[in-house]
Image (cartoon, rainbow, N blue to C red; front, side):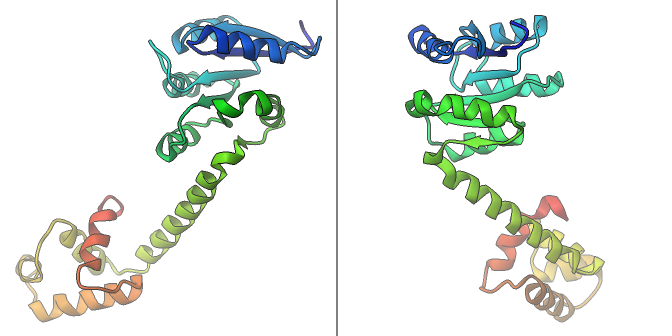
Length: 217
């Protein structure tokens, strides 16, 4: 067993779990596979023995796959995590990647892809099921967009950032001017400068931007 890749499969459907285990063990000598019917039980096994890869169903009783992955991260386990899911859900995908999940496979494609996914994560690479590869592209684009927006915010002066923060609090130009002891005309000039620096256009675009980025101000 020392030379085998140690894998644990956590899924509450015994037939699916057994099928996946049989698939992995069909080549003698490659894998040692343990099973668990939920994430909590899998974690108990993982605390007693080191596994190279954990395959978690995203939807399980007691402790689901994402919560189990989060606990692995908290415990600083080196085990590579692969999530199995029936859902083409971008929000769940992003949550999984945020918590360090290395593989993401749709259950409908598991038979064809699971060995490839395991080898990829063991080699230190992410594996994303091709059927949802668009999620990864969206994620990368969103990260790039956020970085660009943060860079743009850094171009604002301290006064402009303060005004943008007050706009995010639903304050009008008149209310901001009164609070900062300046004229409404000065505030309107600042608003125009902010829009130009952030490349914002439209009547309510600045208010929308301020709401969306108030945590960064």
